[in-house]
Length: 83
Image (cartoon, rainbow, N blue to C red; front, side, top):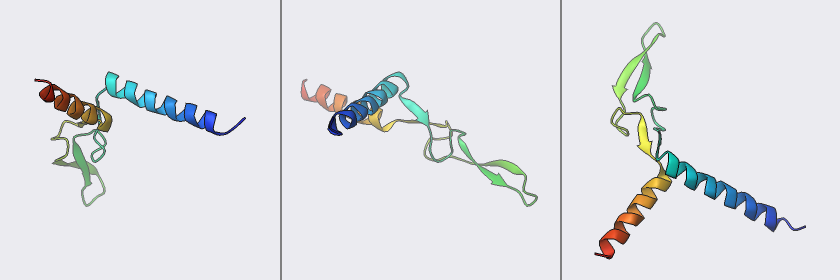
């Protein structure tokens, strides 16, 4: 048995899994603030406190997934091209 068949099946499963994830949940946690919407700072005692709002997600804690962003861009291009 060659190694190409299981490798192809694995890549197909990973790709289809990501497509389903982008379809069911188009927004994921922000990578910069870990979904909190702000950064954590510590005071001089070492106690954690709230920092500034995250600029990437505008303090929502959520960002659109890369696959969903690509799909939205392709659908918008197709829609404007067929008018």
